Image (cartoon, rainbow, N blue to C red):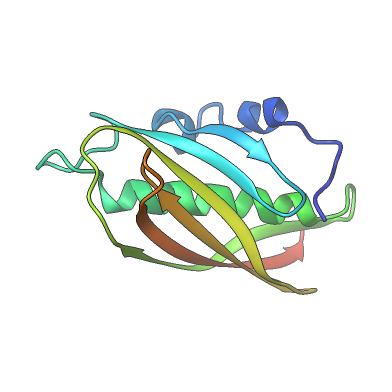
Length: 140
């Protein structure tokens, strides 16, 4: 399903000078139909009371879903994937360590895609679940 010619190292390079880089997001694994990244829970991603900021979780979710969507597009197809809608349910607080997000497809259509992103803590407990709708548009 994903473009097999793109590596984790290449995807990590896309993060240069982006919010994902500022938050310390690192890609961990690309599977047949999923992508996983981790994000530190530290001063960059905390809210004022020392917990993981919900907005940081949404950045991780949208970053993963956007990259996953891009990986489904044929090279040189003249298409690009752009975010249309995102929601997130915050389940559990995290004070430190890492959180891990994994994006998996719910729907891969010609003009829209829907991705589910589950974010867990280091113990594998659910922290946030997000759904991202992507529009597939002409790059021209």
